[in-house]
Length: 391
Ligand SMILES: NC(=O)C1=CN([C@@H]2O[C@H](COP(=O)(O)OP(=O)(O)OC[C@H]3O[C@@H](n4cnc5c(N)ncnc54)[C@H](OP(=O)(O)O)[C@@H]3O)[C@@H](O)[C@H]2O)C=CC1
Ligand SMILES: CC(=O)[C@@H](O)[C@H](O)COP(=O)(O)O
Ligand SMILES: [Mn+2]
Image (cartoon, rainbow, N blue to C red):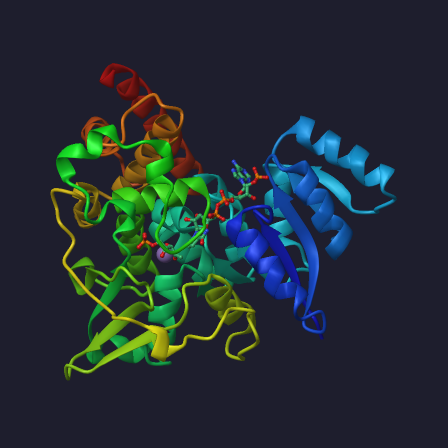
């Protein structure tokens, strides 16, 4: 029987890569629902190609426009509106698997809905786990969901770990997340205050959405990934390490107690972890080019420079602080990245704003979705105000 799929964030970088893989396997997958925020034309094209039962848009004007365009094109997809409809399509009885590819904390509620409904949950939306933490993992357990990582580093760790999680604690010493170092790996840190949006958006290996691309440039992406790994693999923070590997051929590694290391390699192409998550434990064609070892000049590694990337260590600090601190860090960073993209703060002020917001908001153990969203909203308000004062 075909797997019926909901793709949350279908018009984004992960969403379009997911549909690229799905289109290669019409015998295995059927699209049940898609969701997007603003890109009506692309959503219309996706509805024409995949004929989903539902398409969810984030706002009423975008939903109205899509409904009109679908009607003009004689397409029968029903249009619904977020936020409630996101939870509906993530937890619907007729859905088997949910690709969570919305960017930011906006994806948390539908992730929890999918988890509670026991779906196969393909998680690209790392912010949802960074915000949700223990609440998210409890929902996965209680709902009996299957949580599969899509983030390339976490997919690599997942593929490198022993099959039985009960054996991880006694066999694994630590994991090593690889990092590209972004576009500023070799730039003089003293010049980071004058970085332009264009420079920050020039990721060396991946074409991704703007938010994660800026996070890669500050290495906040790796900070979020440390927190994501803590929850996905139930690891103590001190057992999660980061190493810069500019070529991004090794996608991450597991260091075992006997000094043996298992790594996952491949061309840097998100269709690989997406295909892995979609088909696991089977393997299906992803469309990614094969790695040609004879064409690789070198695989190099270096330590992350704390002066250039001060944000990286906020992950371990937030994990050691009061529960909810990672949600504060995430909200602060979402506000800071948006403020940089709107040219309201400088690139080097992203870190300054994150630190100032962490100091200003004291979380009190948010243990429900409602409490997490309230903390997220409170932090955003504080961060917005602090951002104004930076200039
Ligand atoms: N891109 C990549 O290669 C990787 C991404 N990830 C993670 O995957 C997630 C998605 O990243 P990426 O695909 O790059 O992001 P994009 O910005 O490319 O896509 C985001 C998607 O979410 C939709 N969206 C944006 N805001 C909202 C909102 N408030 N409510 C509902 N939908 C919304 C967008 O709609 P629209 O475009 O119509 O406005 C789009 O479909 C992120 O969490 C990222 O960290 C992880 C590893 C790699
Ligand atoms: C493809 C992926 O998973 C991204 O998270 C990407 O790896 C960004 O890498 P860096 O943050 O290391 O630049
Ligand atoms: Mn990643």
